[in-house]
Image 1 (cartoon, each protein chain N blue to C red):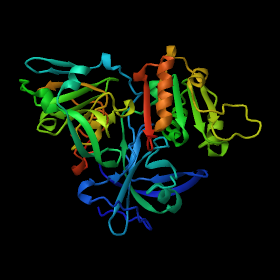
Image 2: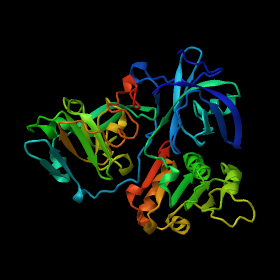
Image 3: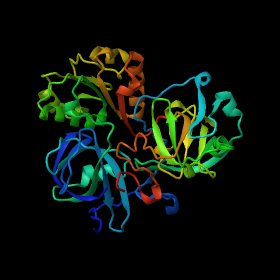
Image 4: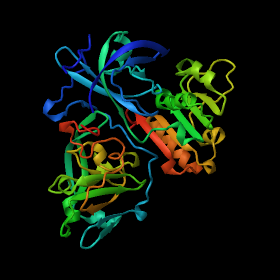
Length: 239
Length: 201
């Protein structure tokens, strides 16, 4: 798979720690919702570092948007979120991955369970659904630390309806008057947000490893068939 | 095409010797978890390991029989296609040579099959000759389910998706049958030193 030059066209702050960086990638072959790219940075002395990031955008010509969380002790993400400006160029290759993907033609029901920046590939699915004019029953259960940390908050508010349900849980702090969930995702919450396992939803879970482990475990306990639960994990383990 | 220089990028240089870190990898001290679905939990009484496919006689071990086989402690570097490498990991496991000892076969390939339905394919030559183990302990402790316990393959010279978690056996075959990730965009062989991550690499 070849490396391509990607030029920054736009940098959009999403939350205090997260930015979306839009690239123009000449020759981009297109992608499916849920796929990722590899990014490569090269220092002046030739030192290189690579990381993988999920694609946030729907296929649209040569445009590829990545939504990147700045990791405090990261080697690559602080550079991408703090340094890149429109006109800068990096290298990128993809799209990668044929498992954690959804296409509107596959239909619903869909249960998308996101933890923090794990929402990115799931947002690509929601955007693909909207772009295709699909009204497939789609539930997004989205765990964030606080209301300020909710990535794509306004867009999700705009897109809800037409079969799309968006449910937030805020695990660390909640705005005054918050009546929504305020705890970690658990089996009870997953059962309430649904759909029921009997409806055979396609389930996609993405987030930090301990989050995905707990959610996937709870889904199987509720009766979802393990092979219908697709997961993508990131970050270090707890142990 | 010469690489694009990223203005102002310094990077964090590993102090690891470069002959131990393949291209595009970085060294981690954590042990990240990558799995395509929920973690299976298999009771040891219901676990067995089998050798099947194109062999003169299929073989099967219960957990107790498997653990009675001679095992080795191995210290190896592992390399995940998602870019992390972990150096000097310590495992205990049964060499695949031990499991295949005396097996008559004309097969040239194996597929590791697993609880949860995962599969991955390898040339037989890549799991024999002291290159692969069925590991049941990591760092002196029983292997945790999220890392593939009760037992996983350990094939450290290839990207780590070839080291199947929750492995239940090997199926020998005359033909190469691409496994789970191999049909989903990832390289059929997966040599980290050649950076064989994806189709076409």
